[in-house]
Image (cartoon, rainbow, N blue to C red):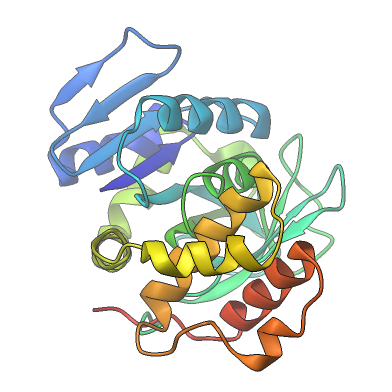
Length: 270
């Protein structure tokens, strides 16, 4: 299962047609399109709306460890219009907070920094992507799945030589349509990775081993379960229990060790 969040109908239309999303539901706060394995919502512009749409889709999504993908257009100082780019860092310009989506092993898509702003960027002060939604989408999507399964893919729509003022719904849709081959590759990779995570459940004795050794709060136990699910997907032949881990005195230190170790492991499909 993969959940897709776009900001505008023009961005969504090529994806709806390409993925065959024929079941439309307008009863919720945002437009939802879906089929048996994909869901797409159109959030509207801005990080607040993107966060709300993502949270709403989570509330009706019963598939644990589904993949999440934010697709849309973005500005960039120097990348050519039409270039497709995967975000390897997302920064909220308003708060300065950053997130680092783990990159899916085996993909050859270009990557770059992505800065989320509150209004369209026209000066492009940094050589980075500029959008208005990713910093709202990403942290919310990560609440319900492993970080590897949450990605942001942007198509450059404007730069210092091509003004953002020239973008129309029709041109935005054309930009998305021209990158459908790359989007299909990304969707397929995330689908396969999601399936592999879902297929591997955390053994009950492994979870009990941790909770019997350290005292976790309810929130920490939820975090522990997510980290152990990632471990089972990425390192199925390497149990996490080891002397280095057991030397940690507090639950928070255990969680930090697991996360740091997992972040150093490249994601492999299949």
